[in-house]
Image (cartoon, rainbow, N blue to C red; front, side, top):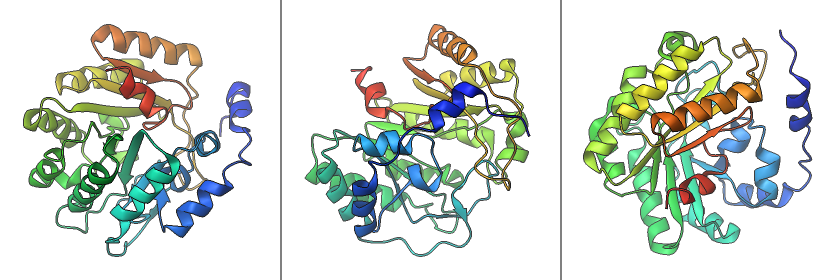
Amino acid sequence: MIEKPKWLKEKLNADRSKVSDIKIMLRSLRLHTVCEEARCPNVGECFASRTATFMILGNVCTRRCRFCAVSKGIPGSPNPKEPESIVHAVQVLQLRHAVITSVTRDDLDDGGASQFVDVVRELRKNCPDTAIELLISDLNGNWKALEKIVREHPDVLNHNVETVPSLYDKVRPGAAYGRSIELLRRVKEIDSTIVTKSGIMVGLGENEEEVRSVMNDLLEAGCSMLTIGQYLQPSHEHLPVVDYVTPEKFENFKTFALEMGFLFVASGPLVRSSYHAAVGFSSLR
């Protein structure tokens, strides 16, 4: 196992003592966040600033991606009160930009699309001034389910490709790189006005040329926002880190992506797909 660089260790030791109020509220509403479930290194910073990425459809995923800390297994039935609880949390936190994601639900006929639709509708009705960003799964290639979500016109629709094609079998068993690119392409085909976004992790054994090739595929699919972050091993049961990418290289990735034509790029060791999402969206206005 390679040692974390000093600059990364220092960042990970951020004070997380101010997050208790957010956690209490989330528990009372029976809500989950990807911040906690995926062991995001930025959870302390985000909770302390009264923001979070809500995770609907429970906290148990039907896939077994080897990079992700979210629990795997057989999930329960969707909670019909979840949309109402999301609205309440958004109002309490006074969010101007709400990010909603979910576990992958291959057990559901529509992959959970109906729950996304209900959440968007409740937010539009009760929080009309809040921008809505959805981070969805590949819906197992169910394009009718995708259309249901897109027709609700979220402000941003995000779907992460996560890694380069050559690593999919090892990193994302059950997923398919081509399917993810096709999903992003179809979103723009259904509604060209929706902003699409995707993200990739580095440090899993990919090379720079592969990363640049993914950028090109995303651009060709109409994607205008990109996030690039360092993979961090959540536990000994997950894939090991192959290498730690330097901040300078992350900056090079950002420069290259912007020169290619992306409208917004967040690239850095602790960047995650929802990190400072409101800033990214605001920069496009």
